[in-house]
Structures are given as C-alpha cells and as structure tokens.
Length: 211
Image (cartoon, rainbow, N blue to C red; front, side, top):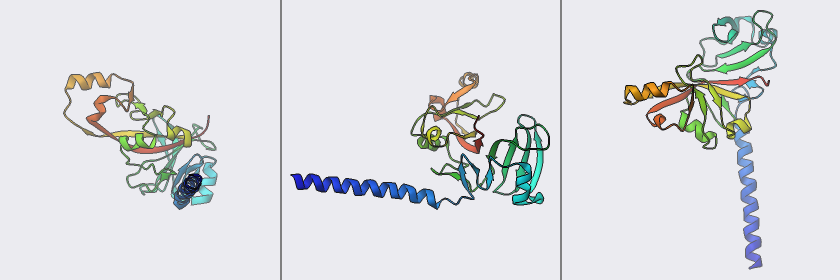
C-alpha cells in the first residue's frame, strides 16, 4: 500500500512539473514582436515617446492623426496588418506620454500570453476569462463595444492592463421591441440571454497605462 502511494505521489509530481514546463514553453514560443503584455504591443511600448518611436521605426513609418473621442494618436505601419495606434495623453506635440496602445487591423499578428487575438469571438473570450462574465458598453453608447470589466476573471488577473473593443458581427431574428429594450442598457453583461442570438468578436485589443 505504501509503495503504491509513493508511486502515485511520484507520478503526480512528474505530471505537475510537465504541466508547468508546457505552460512555460508556450509562453516562450510567442515572438516578442507580436506579444501583447503590460509593457506594450509588440515592439511598441507604453514607455515610448514620439521621439523614441521615430528612432526605432523611422519617421516614414509613423503617421499622426486626431480622433474626435480620444484625441491625438500616432499610427505605426499604417494600412499594414501590423498597424498599431498609439493614443497620447498630451493634446498637442511634443507627445511624451502614451495613454493606451491599440491593435485592431484584420489579420493583426498580435496575441497575449494566453493567445487572445483580434477576431476572437465573445464566447471564446469568456472562456479565456475563466468562464467569468465580461462587461462592455452597448452599441448605443459613445464608446460602443468598449470592454469595461472582466469581473475578477483570469484576463484581469494575468493581464490587468488589457482591455478591448467588441464589434457585433451577427444578429439573429429578434423582435424590435426586445432589441429596443436591450439597447437601453448602458452596459452589457456577456451572460445576458439575448447574446445567444447576437454574436460579437474582439475588434481591437488595447494595453492601458497604469493609473
């Protein structure tokens, strides 16, 4: 009996070590150039300034813009799947403080350590969150689809700087009165029964500066 117990214990320890090794190997396989973490998105870091971006990528790789909601932002590799948008805390140049970094181009190569990518469906995103619900602004709000919370789930635990924007991709037949009532909600909970008939996917990933 004692020998059986020791054998079981030894096998359990080996399995545990293999699981840890596998998890570590998966993380190592993600190219730093596409990794989304609390440091940034790929080669673009939250610590960057406009000047450091110019030095890293060259002036020709950058394009400056203005957004009516979020203000000034700079694009790296515009019109390329690798495109990254950098939103500044400053309202005008010189830009030295990044508010958040966003990747949302179809086919974007970026991913988190647990393989969250642009285009991932809401149901799969909830699974990544440990099957804990996700909250986001309704499409009727000024920032439609913006994720507002992960309710203490895995995404919040492991990548606290992460958020994103969800986009409606498919709508089944829903009575107009029911849809009207749904759109009255400011925030949507991903476990809302109506979402069994409305599909969303992650249209953009964001990394936020710690407040």
